[in-house]
Every structure is written in structure tokens, then in C-alpha cells.
Image 1: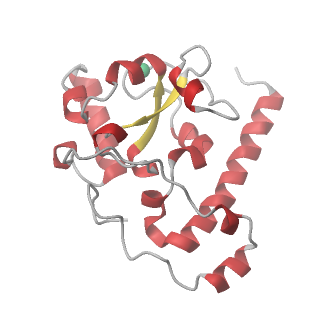
Image 2 (image 1 turned 90 degrees about the vertical axis):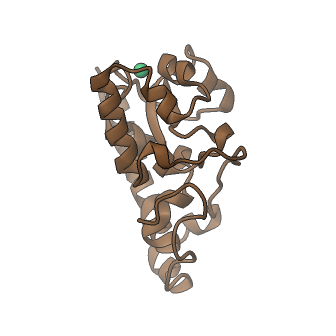
Image 3 (image 1 turned 180 degrees about the vertical axis):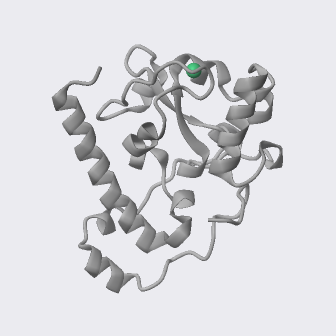
Length: 188
Ligand SMILES: [Zn+2]
């Protein structure tokens, strides 16, 4: 059970991320999820569901400052950001491609392609995981084409500190016209 201080901290983190998302929407328009790394809004992603979508075990809150090492260590961080299409196989470091899962599932999944991973889940969980993938990615997992390892994404940090009205003047329209080329649905 979350204590009051932790609940207040979560609310503050979510509020901070809501402000960040608003600014990302000004810069990237409806395609902001394709251009935003999952760790930028990790509390929002974690708040989307409280159970691991692969095994239904409860997901503890992410640590305040996750590091690459912490993400790999189940003792340090028991909730992991999972790139459904693995970065190492050409999946994007984007909010569209990321969900929170438990550490054991994340490690069991490793760099398997999503369709391969689904085949290892029982039918009910595989169906739920497939639906989650399709909702987040806007395409079925079979449509993913493996490719070269993808870099970690970064976003314009300076702009995120600006006042919303200033940002709207600087960016009267989004800087992109759609998702990045490659393994993505063309929908926002
Ligand atoms: Zn799990």
C-alpha cells in the first residue's frame, strides 16, 4: 500500500509529466508519442496499469532516477520499461513501443520479437498482450520488420522549460508531419 508521502510524490510526478506532455504536443503535434522516449514520462506509463500485462503480477512504482544498471537489476527496480519491439531488433525508443512490465517477464522476453514472445504466453494473456500492442502501436505485431538496433531517443529539453504561451509562439505548428519512417503505423 502506498503511503501518503509516496502518493503525494506520485501526484507531483504525474503533474510534472502532464506539463511536459502538453509541451511535447505543441512541438510534435499528435505524433508526440513517436518522438518521446518512455523514460521521459515513466510515471504516466506506470500509472496506466498496475499489473504486469504479461503475468498479472503487481508492478511497484518506478524508482525516482532509474539508471541503465537499475533497469537490469530486479532487486534495484522490480518494474521495467519493456520495449515491445526490442531496441536491439529495430524497435523504437518511443512511448508507442513501451510498457511497464515486471522484471522477470522483461528478462524472460529479452530480445525476442513480440510475435515469438506471444507464442510463449498462455492464450488469454497472449490475446491481452496483442491487444495492448495493437492499441499502442496502431498495427499488429506481425507488421513489425526487424532491423538495425535503434538509438535511445532524446527530446528538446530546453523547450520543456518554457512557458506554454512562449512555446506556442515558437512552434505555431508541429515540427514533424507524421511518425518517423520505419516500423510505425501512420496514425497518431
Ligand atoms: Zn510479468
